[in-house]
Length: 145
Image (cartoon, rainbow, N blue to C red; front, side, top):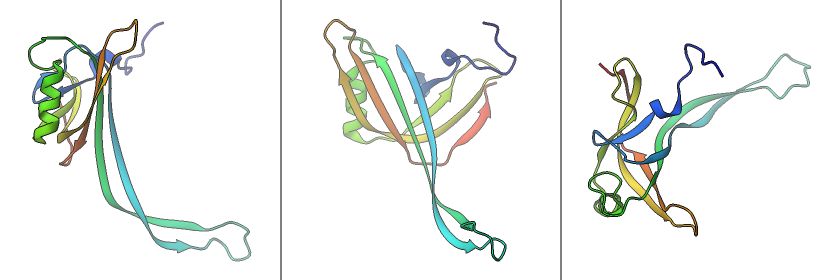
């Protein structure tokens, strides 16, 4: 399959945590959400059977990220289950970035805390760890130089 100029392969977009790539990661996701509130209802043309139009206002923005990585026993640094559990236990804010270090690639980053660590060990398969981060700041967007 030929790639188009603007397509981005998944391995180019990785979550880094405090400036370090999460080792052995396979699935990386960032979810940017907004909560809204109805502030008005505008009727459509008189006599029309339509329901009208609701006007909305954004009242809250949310950011969360998840990462799935293979678990490496005794691995130093990011990829070690102890690292994630310690961060979850201490509630320390770290810088989360979705992107990579290749020059010219776009990234988004935000401060966040580890809110969930899930260890998965299925019979006959490699053990993995799922980490969830919740954002505590606004996002910054940029291009890696």
